[in-house]
Image (cartoon, rainbow, N blue to C red; front, side, top):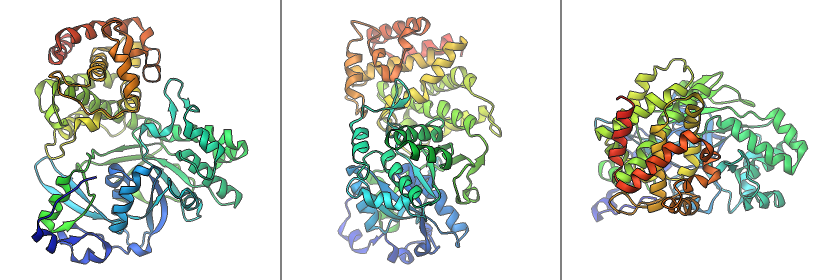
Length: 509
């Protein structure tokens, strides 16, 4: 949550962002001109973070601008007590906020987004959330709940019944804590009232995100009510989707930019890059917005698109995030604008990731990879590596380890990915960069990873014993021989750059 301080002059002349003040805003802020009072909460969105506000809410706002008679509004939902602050800010601003698009050439374009029309807090009023999802007006429930929100036991790929919140939701179905408890309770109401099902639309960076959502929801519903689970299986659509837009954490500088340039007080704007992509399988339970008019691509099968994005962009983020953090970089543009890191990233993408991809209709992969490096290098985004590295234990099993496994199966190169896991071991063990500066680590498995990594000097494979993350990787001799050699070299030399150069040279680059 950004904070900004105003000079007395700025404070006395500033304009608070809200519906009543839209007409007072500079035209350069491109405020919405459609009738927000006519919107209906046809989309209920769980997880109103920066990405949702730069992506789905942006696409919906664009659709509303192009078709003023469209009534597709969004009701936001926060399930955690930590969501209280964003709920309060959006309420004060009539759910308006500014999207700040920062281009690589330094040009900045801002626009006020009006597609969000309400916000409900599940942790304090679960009944209101369930009732809104169950309301006939709701056609889509969409999600950005991060990888960890899907409650997957990463060792088995099944629903994690060891989570106390899952046990609570079974015992207290009307006061759930997990998103699956809310979805099940709402769908229970709709079935009881003979209402059609809503679509459940995942907007998270997870391969086959719709399939995963379906699997987890059916597992929970089956345990609670087998007949309801059968109804969900028959009537609820879970379209897979690929989403993409780099959206760093909002800072005080973003709010101050709006105040100084436009005299507007926006307590929680969003900054993003100009690039935006959304590819969705056109499989919905009932009606859907005409998002294609706003640039969304609807396809029969999203698999090759999402696999491309996860294994190039998302894995590429982790490559720069972990290696760059050890080296002492603070932001992703710093890392990728270093020629060694750019060369290593391109080597990983070309030699290890690309051979595992399927053909992607309409995408020229070499150009796509070059565009990724340009996007990462945008100096005006300032995406912090600490954000990129957060929850790596949920990301790497999805973004990177499948590529490593594919190459182990095919006999392909594994050195680029292996060094990244070695770097993550050192990162988790020392919790500092190679100069001894402390690292900000946010990860649900931070302590188990630290304990496992701390045993590396005595047992080189200790880190790999975190089974929910690595599974049986420690059983693969080709991988472990490479991993042990790299671990010993890094712990002996404390020099990640030299190891990166060796991997590049061994690849013949």
